[in-house]
Image (cartoon, rainbow, N blue to C red; front, side):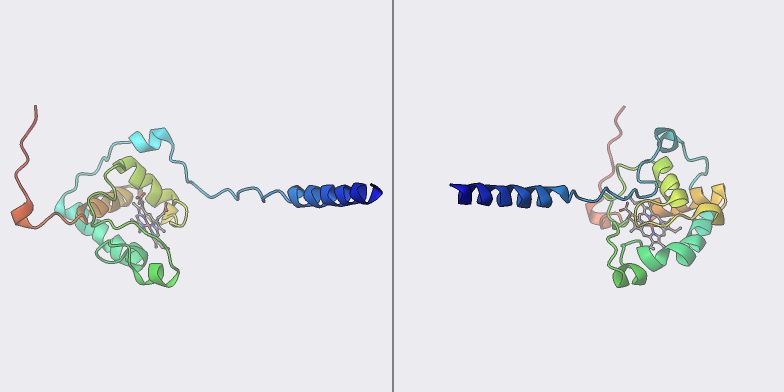
Length: 151
Ligand code: HEC
């Protein structure tokens, strides 16, 4: 019998030691939660050709390296560092995002997405939102049916 007791004690100690190694606490990542107020903020900059042109300049300088020139998410840096980036040419990619959310992400970053922060002026941030929205590839003209307006 004492043998069993010893065995049980050993087993108990073993289990105790294993379960004591609790998983390390999750490292907090920056700005993964977008404040509701920021998400609701309307875009004050109209997507005029001028705004898109300004957005494009920043895009090619600061964003295309990861997001790709066309916005397909396959820029050099993204491929090299194996980042998973949504394909902005796909209409589904950003359909659930508000302009306010996109602006917030551009300005503050989001997980692996770096923040533009002070480098861009507020208005330039909205230009970028407009430009990001313009990257969506619509279907071939034949597939595009005029949308029936619903009142
Ligand atoms: C270092 C690579 C990198 C650069 C440079 C970069 N991004 Fe990103 N971006 C990412 C990654 C990775 C994600 C996905 C983040 C996530 O999982 O939340 C992302 C996400 C986004 C999103 C949100 C997409 C979504 O579905 O929520 C927007 C908008 C965006 N980027 C715009 C930009 C703009 C505009 C620039 C240039 C000012 C830029 N990014 C520069 C890597 C980058």
